[in-house]
Amino acid sequence: KAGVTQTPRYLIKTRGQQVTLSCSPISGHRSVSWYQQTPGQGLQFLFEYFSETQRNKGNFPGRFSGRQFSNSRSEMNVSTLELGDSALYLCASSLEPESLYGYTFGSGTRLTVV
Amino acid sequence: GQQVMQIPQYQHVQEGEDFTTYCNSSTTLSNIQWYKQRPGGHPVFLIQLVKSGEVKKQKRLTFQFGEAKKNSSLHITATQTTDVGTYFCAGDNFNKFYFGSGTKLNVKP
Image 1: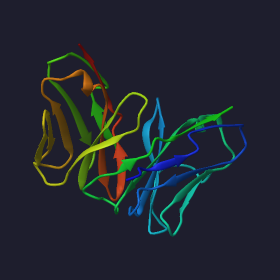
Image 2: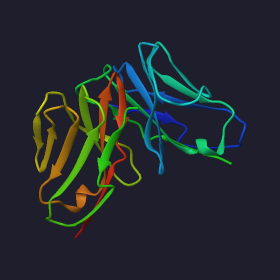
Image 3: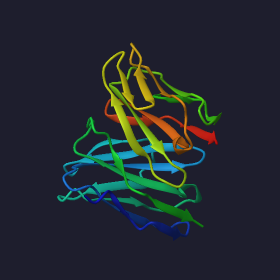
Image 4: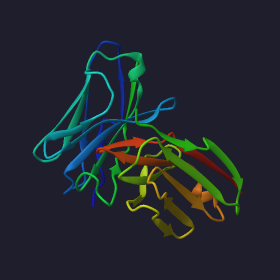
């Protein structure tokens, strides 16, 4: 079966712009989480959605937002981009929150802010 | 605040040697997960531990969850070059997953 699909794979944006990243979970998975990965900070939790509702949010500014649609697909938006937002953004899906089968990660979207 | 610390940061071993990475949380965790990320890849789920003192094995990998559910370890017996990558623990506390900083394993043939 198809894995977690993230689009686009690579993105270059200018400071001040906004960006929307997309994540299509594995068919049947209803929980979607977003993470930011940087060499300095490692993997940091952004937020988790389940059944179109945000369950949890990490310690990121309000410029970072997300949503989940009825088909479980999720989008993440970052407004007023800063240089420090350059990172690999990973989406992960699971059947449900705290699934014993863990989360399946997508290949990520590498965002570069110039 | 919640922190999940992981040590060591790097480990270089000769093929055939054993390897262990440790994960410690400042608070009690409801469960802990382990992931492996190959260079240039994305994290891949290995296992989840839920019970206090739980020990699980996957071939040459042994995972342990501490009695107090605040620490965990991953031990690889007789490493192979295919074990190269970064191993992350992720602790669940109040429905938020906190990833450790990861241990980067390099295996010399």
